[in-house]
Length: 397
Length: 110
Image (cartoon, rainbow over all chains, first blue to last red; front, side, top):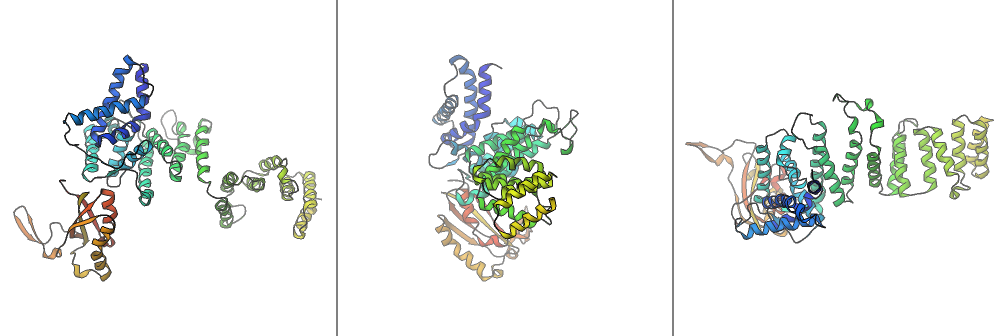
């Protein structure tokens, strides 16, 4: 592929939705907009080798597409839009792309239609590729897309981001479509085809786009995080012969931990709401556990991680260490506690030596445990606590 | 503004005499409610129960509704709305949705 072809292909991958959405606004007709954008990309392939790559390639494409739209309208070949779109006041940029996504996933369209339309209009996948991915003929898929566009025009489905009260339900519909794309991509059979688009890849692209456009929506974050963590394992899902591997059989060294980290960051960001809510969650896990040992310690550690973000206090870190000692063992916790000893804010805080003592005791390091208990006693005034510490000390002497 | 037909469904045979008072009151209140929501009922019609209907299939004339179903059309009205979302917002307030439902169908022509 030549340089220009590579650049245009890349622009097709990254900017299709934005260019289409911007053109839709002028065309007020989905079919006309789509054709014009398609032709603009073709024009780019013809002109750019000759004239050079423009400084703002996406902008060039939008201008080219819009010009074709206006020509078509002026030529009165399209005296009246075939599939007119209901547009509201002038808005631009991310809003247009979001409007496009929400329109494609409107509940008035059948689920199959939502999926086909989203792949075609938002992801820019060709009708043929969509057909092959869903194992139907190209004419069948083309008819499905056309019917959906007709419904949008006939029923006057508005081109906009739904208003406040409707948003949660409508967003949930969008997320379902994207999630369905991902899971279909996952279990799609491998086979011989000229070229098959990776539905999971498109789903991840959509999830990233949604995250960019709606950064404050928790479930948008959640969906992307889910995809990233699942994608991290994709290399090990089957063995060399194509046989499906179970989770316990997968080679974890081949998991993409960078994706897991990215997913984890999103999850924790989503848990940020309130230190009180997080403390309540931790307390609830304790309250629900049938026994101390059966408490969901790993989950508690995760919640403490989130709590530390909301409330970066060394005391929280210390409490976290106690949970770590139950989830990962006293040795791991001791490392965390020792790291906290250098935190000046904990000087004189009696629970630090007390917890350290307990960990050392559990590790069988008697003499060090004794020292730590004595240090704790020196800082403790409360009678009940003193008795507790003395008793512990007694068992070690 | 666009015009839609709202087809109102009730459990067969859709006899208005079967409607409890609150449901009937809610139907009567629809016109004002829809006006408040920014739309308009252009025309509204209530139908006699399907027991009063006569159907013609091809050449054959029969007693009763065209399709035997558990839920049948009880009435319809022409609704003026900005767009489909607006139509949905208003149509879903119809008390028919308590036990059956409504269908929103765009009309041809501007």
